[in-house]
Length: 175
Length: 116
Image 1 (tube, each protein chain N blue to C red):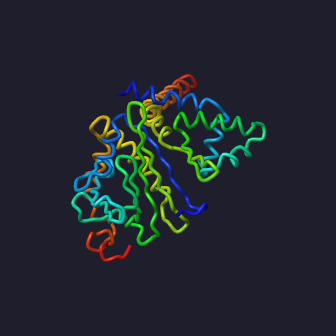
Image 2: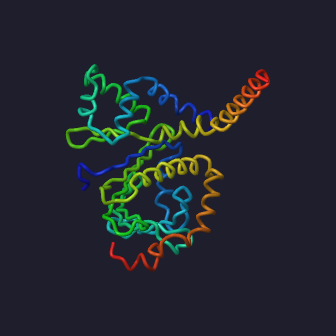
Image 3: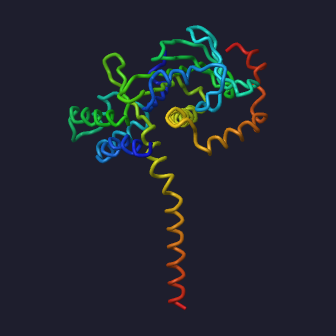
């Protein structure tokens, strides 16, 4: 449970598609989630099961965690380690979906950042972008050209990431 | 889509058109705060008035409120601000900057030719 002194990010966006469609997008496993920086989610989606967000070719791991709660199509919570930061205490990501007239309200809470965590602000900026992309993807079926260009650049520069993000290395660590 | 997006932002503009509410957003920008702590920052406004302003901000989705036991925590939601930026700022920024630079060049040329 987060301490009162901890930092919590809360971001909320209204998306004009049915709740079920948003749920499907954010819990989709085994294929690219375009709004989520092209990550591939792998998990069994039940409390206690392990969770990974991989690069598209699955050679790198960006996020390591464990599922905390799954209540389709309303709530999905998991612990979160940002692999590039090395071994830090887990934070908690919670997706909450609720029905609104003509759509779905998506509220993302990222809790448990303390002074030992690196780049809490960057995580917030990332979620802000991700939620905008999620809205764009689901409402229009696409994401902006500049983001798609950025993704292709990211694909070519994956080798620049620390060795510790390689899938084999990540699985050697007890998170 | 464009028309709907503009309509979605109507309550945001209305909420921002008030100095007390803008001040509340500034305070929340430093981190989430319980309603009581927020109200104490405003000497000339009652707690009730601040709660009403928070209600307007919540309706505009600029503030997300979470009950935490007996207190309500107020979080600044950065999403609508980002949407205003995407819709109004980034689109106009470039032409504005360019035309201002053009104007500056033109005026400076005129001044120089008059002086010379």
